[in-house]
Amino acid sequence: MSILAVGTVAFDSIDTPFGSAERVLGGSASYLTLAARHFCDDVRLVGVVGGDFPAEYRQILADGGVDLRGLEVEEDGETFFWHGEYHYDMNERDTLDTQLNVLASFDPDLPDAYLDSDIVCLGNLEPEIQRTVLDQVDDPDLVIADTMNYWIENTPDSLRETLRLVDCLVINDAEARELVDDPNLVRAADKIRDLGPETLIIKKGEHGALLFTDGSVFSAPAYPLEDIQDPTGAGDAFAGGLAGHLHRCEAVDQTSLRRAVVYGSVMASFVVERYGPDRLLDLGPSDITDRAQSFQDLAAIPTLVPLQKQPA
Image 1 (tube, helix red, strand yellow):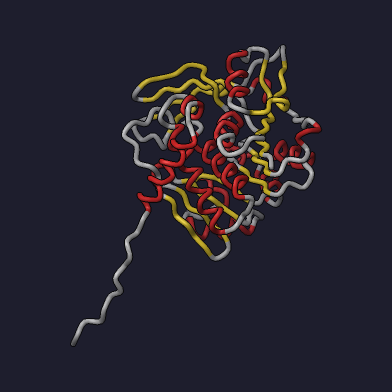
Image 2: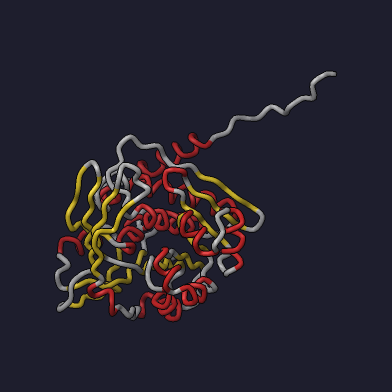
């Protein structure tokens, strides 16, 4: 089986109360693929960069096992750039600069070798572009999508058209509330699933993630870390780990989805430990397995003793 990820490949500049990084490799497609490739040997990237994109960054992706035949290069253009600042509450950030550059005219044309992709991950892009990708893929087994408040506010009709084609939507709690204008996440989840996605995952940052399926809600914890360097890309790495595990077990049922949420959380927990995607590059299977076990231990609930009726 194969995983196709479409999204941004970017330069990120990041400021936090604890340090900063300039023009590191970033973008949703970068984090998605570098997380997913730990679970899948056939990970395909669709994106666009400019002529300023360094060979070093391209090599990082290639050495990570990512198929780059779908990475377009506009030699006369400049790569998408984002500059953000985080505060002591790492769930909050300010965007200081966004330069779309080559992304502004991105019209993905998938290589023929990508058309049989089994799992398609639609990173945070304009909903029409997401549909353009789906129009080209031959009946994928699973479509996972992300979006953000900008598309919710500015292209609501186009976004809803895309959601009708999506099997699993992965968004944060603020986006879930805004998407259906409901402050209650349980009610919001029901309304979002009515729009198309049978499976909904709501990320809650340091408070973990919620999985909503038919008649079932599952809550996964966040991993407690002493040192958080950079939350950028954590949500995309989550989606990569999620897709990767579902590829590995070749099934989409309650058990596999719950485990996939845990593995998504595992990959997200690694990303925040360093600036950019560096932490994803030096992981081994034992690192991922050990942290997954830590998540299981963290969420273990001892056997509960039934409450007995007190004597009169």
